[in-house]
Length: 210
Length: 265
Image 1 (cartoon, rainbow over the protein chains, first blue to last red):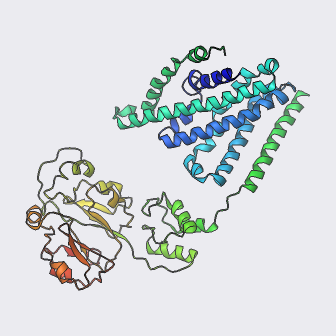
Image 2 (cartoon, chains in turn cyan, purple):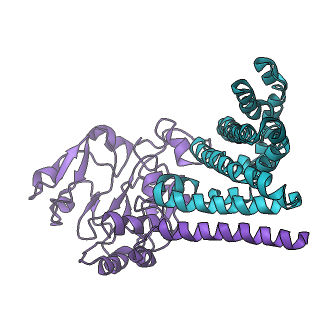
Image 3 (tube, each protein chain N blue to C red):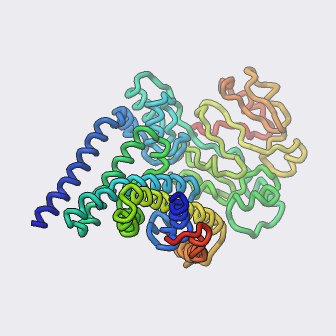
């Protein structure tokens, strides 16, 4: 079990990295990755929101949507839940963690409509929803939570790597038409294939099939 | 039937979320002092950063929450300081701050020591032997300060920066961008003199470099009745806490570089 959880965790970071392999969450990836501090803060918020969102939406899907045969409401209900969560976190940070609140600034509400968070909650249901029947709810729930945190950490890894890339790119002097976003997109395109190279590595290290 | 179920489900989820948020907003509300908003209304709103805070709102917060002095808004001037003082309680007698360029090394006074053909910015030129002028402390004259000034108050005239006192708000943007640090923010007001030179070379060398250089002769220091002006590093500097504005140094200076730059002609 632990081996499988570890395999899930690392596969979400390296093999199935949400940003660089699945291309979700590109908006904050390009927008907030200018500085290492802000990308770390943003990633922290994303990890937290992904974890909380999955913790709420997975049982919601298993115990409410599936028995009531309302699986098609998944998207709208999940968006509602995520929006509430992000608002809640914003209020929470403003009260108790002012420095982080100031650091995240305008980016925190962006997570509300971040496809990355919605994708995690939906894909987790797709991947581990079936495990409820075979392994029981508790095991599937833990798997899905580990997967969500792993996705968030993967997001953080991508953000940190790319903020490093961007500080280098910023010091360069690209041709006029490439300045700004174009050169950022080009460097993102060069960064992402390296993660393709991780394909299969986790299965072989942990010797499990995911 | 399924439509009803779907509607009910969405409504329930939405209502639960709304209740959670309302409760959170109520129990975790951050009470903001209403004075913060009043103070920021008094400020200039230019977000120039001259006060040393991230912006006008940040400074207003610092005034109300941390009791920071209320006369830091340079563009707002004494008017803003008094308005803030009225809100916060207490009086203030603020002098309008102005930028003063402590260099008169124009093309005529200070000859170039080499021909500079690089990028026309002060920062780049200053990195090459301290700038193309003979005096290595002189205003470079490529106008980094002109670009950074939000009030169109500083211009390059004959190769040296000149402040338009009627437009200057004393925000200090020029002083902080200047690579030679020849711009000072004069907080002493028009009644007190300023040494309009930054040259740190010894007298004979300074004399060769520029026609308006401080030659560190020490006449001002010897004659000052209030021990307010001193020659340090071969340049005269005034201690404004001691200066009474008597003007002895102004009349004694053989190079006539101590003047009242803020005094209206």
